[in-house]
Image (tube, rainbow, N blue to C red; front, side):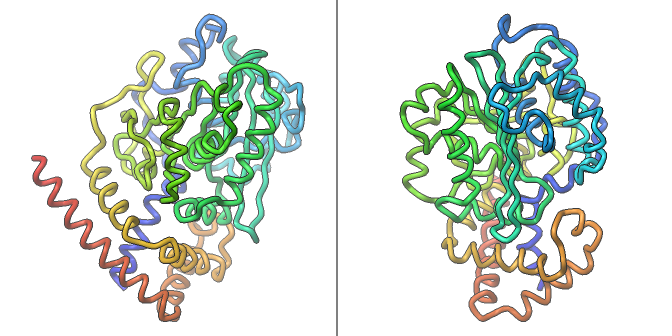
Length: 397
Protein backbone atom coordinates (compact mmCIF):
# COMPACT_ATOMS: atom_id res chain seq x y z
CA UNK A 1 0.00 0.00 0.00
CA UNK A 2 2.92 2.40 0.65
CA UNK A 3 4.07 2.09 -2.95
CA UNK A 4 0.57 2.82 -4.16
CA UNK A 5 0.33 5.85 -1.91
CA UNK A 6 3.62 7.09 -3.38
CA UNK A 7 2.22 6.62 -6.88
CA UNK A 8 -0.95 8.54 -6.12
CA UNK A 9 0.97 11.33 -4.40
CA UNK A 10 3.29 11.85 -7.35
CA UNK A 11 0.46 11.99 -9.85
CA UNK A 12 -1.54 14.32 -7.62
CA UNK A 13 1.43 16.66 -7.41
CA UNK A 14 1.92 16.81 -11.16
CA UNK A 15 -1.67 17.22 -12.32
CA UNK A 16 -3.54 18.56 -9.31
CA UNK A 17 -1.16 21.38 -8.38
CA UNK A 18 -3.76 24.11 -9.08
CA UNK A 19 -6.05 22.57 -6.46
CA UNK A 20 -3.78 23.94 -3.75
CA UNK A 21 -3.81 27.53 -4.96
CA UNK A 22 -6.13 28.65 -2.19
CA UNK A 23 -3.03 29.22 -0.06
CA UNK A 24 -2.13 32.89 -0.30
CA UNK A 25 1.32 34.16 -1.12
CA UNK A 26 2.89 37.05 0.70
CA UNK A 27 3.89 38.41 -2.75
CA UNK A 28 6.57 40.88 -1.60
CA UNK A 29 8.10 41.01 -5.10
CA UNK A 30 6.64 42.83 -8.14
CA UNK A 31 4.03 40.74 -9.94
CA UNK A 32 1.45 41.06 -12.73
CA UNK A 33 -0.62 43.53 -10.73
CA UNK A 34 2.39 45.83 -10.38
CA UNK A 35 3.00 45.62 -14.13
CA UNK A 36 -0.57 46.72 -14.89
CA UNK A 37 -0.39 49.57 -12.40
CA UNK A 38 2.93 50.84 -13.81
CA UNK A 39 2.34 50.42 -17.54
CA UNK A 40 -1.44 50.39 -17.76
CA UNK A 41 -1.59 53.80 -19.42
CA UNK A 42 0.56 52.68 -22.37
CA UNK A 43 -1.62 51.57 -25.28
CA UNK A 44 -1.03 48.51 -27.43
CA UNK A 45 -0.50 50.85 -30.38
CA UNK A 46 2.44 52.40 -28.52
CA UNK A 47 3.85 49.09 -27.30
CA UNK A 48 2.74 45.74 -28.67
CA UNK A 49 1.70 42.66 -26.76
CA UNK A 50 4.32 41.02 -24.55
CA UNK A 51 4.64 37.98 -22.30
CA UNK A 52 2.99 39.69 -19.34
CA UNK A 53 -0.03 40.78 -21.37
CA UNK A 54 -0.32 37.22 -22.68
CA UNK A 55 -0.26 35.87 -19.13
CA UNK A 56 -2.99 38.32 -18.10
CA UNK A 57 -5.29 37.34 -20.97
CA UNK A 58 -4.64 33.67 -20.25
CA UNK A 59 -5.69 34.10 -16.63
CA UNK A 60 -8.74 36.23 -17.45
CA UNK A 61 -10.05 33.20 -19.35
CA UNK A 62 -10.63 31.50 -15.98
CA UNK A 63 -13.47 33.89 -15.16
CA UNK A 64 -16.97 32.61 -15.74
CA UNK A 65 -18.57 35.06 -18.18
CA UNK A 66 -21.69 32.98 -18.66
CA UNK A 67 -24.74 35.16 -19.23
CA UNK A 68 -22.69 38.23 -20.16
CA UNK A 69 -22.29 40.18 -23.39
CA UNK A 70 -19.04 38.29 -24.11
CA UNK A 71 -21.02 35.18 -25.09
CA UNK A 72 -21.58 34.57 -28.78
CA UNK A 73 -21.05 38.21 -29.75
CA UNK A 74 -19.14 38.58 -32.99
CA UNK A 75 -18.62 42.32 -32.42
CA UNK A 76 -17.53 41.98 -28.83
CA UNK A 77 -17.85 44.18 -25.77
CA UNK A 78 -15.08 46.32 -24.30
CA UNK A 79 -13.27 44.94 -21.27
CA UNK A 80 -14.31 48.04 -19.35
CA UNK A 81 -17.99 47.51 -20.10
CA UNK A 82 -17.75 43.76 -19.51
CA UNK A 83 -16.15 44.33 -16.11
CA UNK A 84 -18.84 46.84 -15.14
CA UNK A 85 -21.59 44.39 -16.07
CA UNK A 86 -19.84 41.50 -14.35
CA UNK A 87 -19.31 43.25 -11.03
CA UNK A 88 -22.78 44.80 -11.02
CA UNK A 89 -24.44 41.43 -11.55
CA UNK A 90 -25.61 39.20 -8.73
CA UNK A 91 -24.58 36.25 -10.89
CA UNK A 92 -20.94 36.52 -9.86
CA UNK A 93 -21.77 35.95 -6.20
CA UNK A 94 -22.95 32.45 -7.02
CA UNK A 95 -19.75 31.43 -8.79
CA UNK A 96 -18.57 28.08 -7.51
CA UNK A 97 -14.91 29.03 -7.72
CA UNK A 98 -15.00 32.48 -6.15
CA UNK A 99 -13.55 31.37 -2.82
CA UNK A 100 -10.43 29.98 -4.46
CA UNK A 101 -7.51 32.36 -4.34
CA UNK A 102 -6.55 31.96 -7.99
CA UNK A 103 -10.05 32.95 -9.16
CA UNK A 104 -10.13 35.83 -6.72
CA UNK A 105 -6.86 37.02 -8.26
CA UNK A 106 -8.35 36.69 -11.75
CA UNK A 107 -11.34 38.81 -10.80
CA UNK A 108 -9.11 41.37 -9.13
CA UNK A 109 -7.09 41.54 -12.36
CA UNK A 110 -10.28 42.07 -14.36
CA UNK A 111 -11.24 44.97 -12.11
CA UNK A 112 -7.80 46.62 -12.24
CA UNK A 113 -7.02 46.04 -15.92
CA UNK A 114 -10.43 47.23 -17.12
CA UNK A 115 -9.78 50.64 -15.58
CA UNK A 116 -6.46 51.11 -17.43
CA UNK A 117 -6.02 52.71 -20.84
CA UNK A 118 -4.05 49.71 -22.14
CA UNK A 119 -6.85 47.19 -21.58
CA UNK A 120 -10.15 49.04 -21.19
CA UNK A 121 -10.89 49.16 -24.91
CA UNK A 122 -9.96 45.53 -25.64
CA UNK A 123 -12.96 43.82 -27.25
CA UNK A 124 -14.00 40.55 -25.59
CA UNK A 125 -16.07 38.00 -27.50
CA UNK A 126 -16.65 34.36 -28.29
CA UNK A 127 -16.85 33.17 -24.69
CA UNK A 128 -17.83 29.51 -24.48
CA UNK A 129 -17.80 27.08 -21.57
CA UNK A 130 -18.73 23.41 -21.80
CA UNK A 131 -18.79 20.73 -19.12
CA UNK A 132 -19.82 17.13 -19.73
CA UNK A 133 -19.23 14.98 -16.66
CA UNK A 134 -20.30 11.79 -18.44
CA UNK A 135 -17.80 12.30 -21.26
CA UNK A 136 -15.18 13.79 -18.88
CA UNK A 137 -14.94 16.95 -20.97
CA UNK A 138 -14.30 20.48 -19.72
CA UNK A 139 -13.61 23.22 -22.24
CA UNK A 140 -13.68 27.01 -22.22
CA UNK A 141 -12.20 29.69 -24.45
CA UNK A 142 -12.51 33.40 -25.16
CA UNK A 143 -11.24 35.98 -27.68
CA UNK A 144 -9.57 39.30 -26.83
CA UNK A 145 -9.25 41.75 -29.75
CA UNK A 146 -6.57 44.28 -28.88
CA UNK A 147 -7.14 46.13 -32.14
CA UNK A 148 -9.00 45.37 -35.39
CA UNK A 149 -5.92 43.46 -36.62
CA UNK A 150 -4.44 41.98 -33.43
CA UNK A 151 -6.15 39.28 -31.37
CA UNK A 152 -5.48 36.87 -28.51
CA UNK A 153 -7.39 33.57 -28.33
CA UNK A 154 -7.21 32.30 -24.74
CA UNK A 155 -7.98 28.76 -23.61
CA UNK A 156 -8.94 28.14 -20.00
CA UNK A 157 -6.97 25.75 -17.85
CA UNK A 158 -8.63 23.10 -15.74
CA UNK A 159 -11.46 24.25 -13.49
CA UNK A 160 -12.53 22.54 -10.28
CA UNK A 161 -14.67 19.84 -11.91
CA UNK A 162 -13.49 16.25 -11.61
CA UNK A 163 -14.55 15.74 -15.23
CA UNK A 164 -12.05 18.44 -16.17
CA UNK A 165 -9.26 16.78 -14.24
CA UNK A 166 -9.91 13.36 -15.75
CA UNK A 167 -9.71 15.06 -19.13
CA UNK A 168 -6.43 16.67 -18.04
CA UNK A 169 -4.94 13.26 -17.28
CA UNK A 170 -6.16 11.73 -20.53
CA UNK A 171 -4.22 14.30 -22.53
CA UNK A 172 -1.02 12.46 -21.66
CA UNK A 173 -2.07 9.15 -23.17
CA UNK A 174 -4.60 9.95 -25.92
CA UNK A 175 -3.70 11.06 -29.44
CA UNK A 176 -6.68 13.44 -29.33
CA UNK A 177 -9.12 14.13 -26.53
CA UNK A 178 -12.59 15.58 -27.01
CA UNK A 179 -11.41 18.82 -25.42
CA UNK A 180 -8.50 19.13 -27.83
CA UNK A 181 -10.88 18.55 -30.73
CA UNK A 182 -13.15 21.31 -29.40
CA UNK A 183 -10.13 23.61 -29.08
CA UNK A 184 -9.18 23.01 -32.71
CA UNK A 185 -12.74 23.67 -33.92
CA UNK A 186 -12.98 26.86 -31.86
CA UNK A 187 -9.57 28.08 -33.02
CA UNK A 188 -10.28 27.48 -36.71
CA UNK A 189 -13.71 29.11 -36.47
CA UNK A 190 -12.44 32.30 -34.88
CA UNK A 191 -9.24 32.47 -36.90
CA UNK A 192 -11.43 32.57 -40.02
CA UNK A 193 -13.41 35.50 -38.57
CA UNK A 194 -10.54 37.56 -37.20
CA UNK A 195 -8.48 39.70 -39.62
CA UNK A 196 -4.79 40.28 -39.08
CA UNK A 197 -2.36 38.72 -36.62
CA UNK A 198 -3.28 36.22 -33.93
CA UNK A 199 -1.70 35.24 -30.63
CA UNK A 200 -2.98 32.33 -28.59
CA UNK A 201 -2.14 30.71 -25.28
CA UNK A 202 -3.21 29.62 -21.86
CA UNK A 203 -2.21 28.50 -18.42
CA UNK A 204 -1.85 24.81 -17.49
CA UNK A 205 -4.21 22.73 -19.65
CA UNK A 206 -5.15 25.89 -21.54
CA UNK A 207 -1.59 26.08 -22.91
CA UNK A 208 -1.81 22.47 -24.05
CA UNK A 209 -5.01 23.26 -25.94
CA UNK A 210 -3.52 26.36 -27.59
CA UNK A 211 -0.46 24.47 -28.83
CA UNK A 212 -2.59 21.58 -30.04
CA UNK A 213 -4.93 23.88 -31.95
CA UNK A 214 -2.13 25.68 -33.79
CA UNK A 215 -0.24 22.45 -34.50
CA UNK A 216 -3.33 20.89 -36.08
CA UNK A 217 -4.54 23.98 -37.94
CA UNK A 218 -4.06 24.45 -41.67
CA UNK A 219 -1.00 26.27 -43.08
CA UNK A 220 -3.01 29.35 -44.07
CA UNK A 221 -3.99 29.86 -40.42
CA UNK A 222 -0.59 28.94 -39.02
CA UNK A 223 1.07 31.67 -41.09
CA UNK A 224 -0.96 34.29 -39.21
CA UNK A 225 0.06 33.10 -35.75
CA UNK A 226 2.65 35.41 -34.21
CA UNK A 227 2.89 33.89 -30.76
CA UNK A 228 1.85 30.75 -28.88
CA UNK A 229 2.12 31.40 -25.14
CA UNK A 230 2.62 28.39 -22.89
CA UNK A 231 2.38 29.14 -19.17
CA UNK A 232 3.34 25.85 -17.52
CA UNK A 233 1.19 23.61 -19.64
CA UNK A 234 1.69 19.82 -19.57
CA UNK A 235 3.01 18.16 -22.73
CA UNK A 236 1.53 15.68 -25.13
CA UNK A 237 1.28 11.98 -25.76
CA UNK A 238 4.03 10.13 -27.56
CA UNK A 239 2.22 10.31 -30.88
CA UNK A 240 5.01 10.88 -33.48
CA UNK A 241 2.76 12.89 -35.80
CA UNK A 242 1.80 15.33 -33.05
CA UNK A 243 5.40 15.73 -31.88
CA UNK A 244 6.47 16.46 -35.48
CA UNK A 245 3.74 19.08 -35.80
CA UNK A 246 4.88 20.75 -32.57
CA UNK A 247 8.46 20.79 -33.79
CA UNK A 248 7.34 22.63 -36.94
CA UNK A 249 5.90 25.53 -34.87
CA UNK A 250 8.37 25.34 -31.98
CA UNK A 251 9.96 28.67 -32.85
CA UNK A 252 6.73 30.51 -32.05
CA UNK A 253 5.99 28.68 -28.80
CA UNK A 254 7.05 30.76 -25.81
CA UNK A 255 7.16 28.56 -22.71
CA UNK A 256 7.37 29.81 -19.13
CA UNK A 257 7.66 27.60 -16.07
CA UNK A 258 8.31 28.45 -12.41
CA UNK A 259 11.56 27.51 -10.70
CA UNK A 260 9.98 24.48 -9.04
CA UNK A 261 7.82 23.34 -11.93
CA UNK A 262 5.73 20.22 -11.26
CA UNK A 263 3.24 20.57 -14.11
CA UNK A 264 5.06 22.06 -17.09
CA UNK A 265 7.79 19.41 -16.99
CA UNK A 266 5.36 16.49 -17.35
CA UNK A 267 5.50 14.98 -20.86
CA UNK A 268 7.19 18.19 -21.94
CA UNK A 269 7.20 18.79 -25.68
CA UNK A 270 9.35 21.93 -25.84
CA UNK A 271 13.07 22.46 -26.38
CA UNK A 272 13.46 25.95 -24.91
CA UNK A 273 11.80 27.68 -21.98
CA UNK A 274 12.14 30.50 -19.48
CA UNK A 275 12.36 29.66 -15.78
CA UNK A 276 10.64 32.26 -13.59
CA UNK A 277 11.10 33.11 -9.94
CA UNK A 278 8.08 32.78 -7.65
CA UNK A 279 7.17 33.85 -4.14
CA UNK A 280 5.44 30.53 -3.52
CA UNK A 281 6.80 27.07 -2.78
CA UNK A 282 6.53 23.72 -4.56
CA UNK A 283 3.19 23.17 -6.37
CA UNK A 284 1.92 26.60 -5.26
CA UNK A 285 4.31 28.08 -7.84
CA UNK A 286 1.81 27.03 -10.51
CA UNK A 287 -0.01 30.26 -9.63
CA UNK A 288 1.13 32.86 -12.21
CA UNK A 289 0.19 35.68 -9.86
CA UNK A 290 3.07 34.60 -7.60
CA UNK A 291 5.64 34.91 -10.41
CA UNK A 292 8.15 37.76 -10.21
CA UNK A 293 8.02 40.56 -12.75
CA UNK A 294 10.93 42.74 -13.80
CA UNK A 295 9.59 45.71 -15.73
CA UNK A 296 7.81 44.33 -18.79
CA UNK A 297 9.07 40.74 -18.51
CA UNK A 298 9.05 37.92 -16.01
CA UNK A 299 12.12 37.74 -13.77
CA UNK A 300 14.03 34.64 -14.83
CA UNK A 301 16.62 32.34 -13.29
CA UNK A 302 19.11 30.06 -15.02
CA UNK A 303 17.56 26.69 -14.24
CA UNK A 304 14.79 24.84 -12.42
CA UNK A 305 15.23 23.78 -8.81
CA UNK A 306 16.62 20.45 -7.64
CA UNK A 307 13.10 19.34 -6.66
CA UNK A 308 11.76 20.12 -10.12
CA UNK A 309 14.65 18.37 -11.88
CA UNK A 310 14.22 15.22 -9.80
CA UNK A 311 10.46 15.23 -10.32
CA UNK A 312 10.96 15.81 -14.04
CA UNK A 313 13.42 12.93 -14.36
CA UNK A 314 11.39 10.53 -12.20
CA UNK A 315 8.01 11.17 -13.76
CA UNK A 316 9.05 11.31 -17.40
CA UNK A 317 11.28 8.25 -17.14
CA UNK A 318 8.38 6.37 -15.57
CA UNK A 319 5.83 7.54 -18.11
CA UNK A 320 8.15 6.62 -20.99
CA UNK A 321 8.11 3.01 -19.74
CA UNK A 322 4.31 2.85 -19.68
CA UNK A 323 2.03 1.95 -22.53
CA UNK A 324 -0.98 4.18 -23.10
CA UNK A 325 -3.14 1.30 -21.89
CA UNK A 326 -1.22 1.07 -18.61
CA UNK A 327 -1.44 4.79 -18.00
CA UNK A 328 -5.15 4.71 -18.77
CA UNK A 329 -5.58 2.00 -16.12
CA UNK A 330 -4.03 4.29 -13.50
CA UNK A 331 -6.21 7.22 -14.52
CA UNK A 332 -9.38 5.15 -14.36
CA UNK A 333 -8.47 3.67 -10.96
CA UNK A 334 -8.00 7.15 -9.51
CA UNK A 335 -11.10 8.79 -10.95
CA UNK A 336 -13.39 5.79 -10.56
CA UNK A 337 -12.58 5.96 -6.85
CA UNK A 338 -13.58 9.62 -6.82
CA UNK A 339 -16.88 8.93 -8.56
CA UNK A 340 -17.69 6.03 -6.26
CA UNK A 341 -17.14 8.25 -3.23
CA UNK A 342 -19.48 10.93 -4.60
CA UNK A 343 -16.79 13.44 -5.51
CA UNK A 344 -17.72 15.75 -8.39
CA UNK A 345 -15.42 18.74 -7.86
CA UNK A 346 -12.22 19.52 -5.99
CA UNK A 347 -14.07 21.08 -3.08
CA UNK A 348 -15.52 17.64 -2.46
CA UNK A 349 -11.98 16.23 -2.12
CA UNK A 350 -11.02 18.86 0.42
CA UNK A 351 -14.21 18.27 2.38
CA UNK A 352 -14.12 14.47 2.18
CA UNK A 353 -10.45 13.51 2.23
CA UNK A 354 -11.04 10.49 4.45
CA UNK A 355 -13.85 9.12 2.27
CA UNK A 356 -11.80 9.60 -0.89
CA UNK A 357 -8.71 7.91 0.58
CA UNK A 358 -10.77 4.97 1.79
CA UNK A 359 -12.47 4.64 -1.58
CA UNK A 360 -9.14 4.74 -3.40
CA UNK A 361 -7.60 2.13 -1.11
CA UNK A 362 -10.66 -0.09 -1.53
CA UNK A 363 -10.55 0.35 -5.29
CA UNK A 364 -6.89 -0.71 -5.40
CA UNK A 365 -7.47 -3.68 -3.09
CA UNK A 366 -10.47 -5.05 -4.96
CA UNK A 367 -9.30 -4.12 -8.45
CA UNK A 368 -8.80 -6.67 -11.17
CA UNK A 369 -5.62 -8.61 -11.75
CA UNK A 370 -4.43 -6.36 -14.59
CA UNK A 371 -4.94 -3.19 -12.55
CA UNK A 372 -3.04 -4.58 -9.55
CA UNK A 373 -0.21 -5.73 -11.81
CA UNK A 374 -0.02 -2.29 -13.44
CA UNK A 375 0.00 -0.45 -10.11
CA UNK A 376 2.78 -2.66 -8.80
CA UNK A 377 4.84 -2.22 -11.97
CA UNK A 378 4.46 1.56 -11.90
CA UNK A 379 5.37 1.70 -8.22
CA UNK A 380 8.59 -0.19 -8.93
CA UNK A 381 9.39 2.12 -11.86
CA UNK A 382 8.84 5.20 -9.73
CA UNK A 383 11.15 3.92 -6.99
CA UNK A 384 13.86 2.95 -9.49
CA UNK A 385 13.71 6.21 -11.42
CA UNK A 386 13.61 8.32 -8.25
CA UNK A 387 16.80 6.67 -7.03
CA UNK A 388 18.43 7.28 -10.40
CA UNK A 389 17.36 10.94 -10.35
CA UNK A 390 18.80 11.33 -6.87
CA UNK A 391 22.14 9.90 -8.04
CA UNK A 392 22.20 12.30 -10.98
CA UNK A 393 21.61 15.25 -8.68
CA UNK A 394 24.47 14.17 -6.42
CA UNK A 395 26.80 14.22 -9.43
CA UNK A 396 25.84 17.85 -10.09
CA UNK A 397 27.23 18.98 -6.73
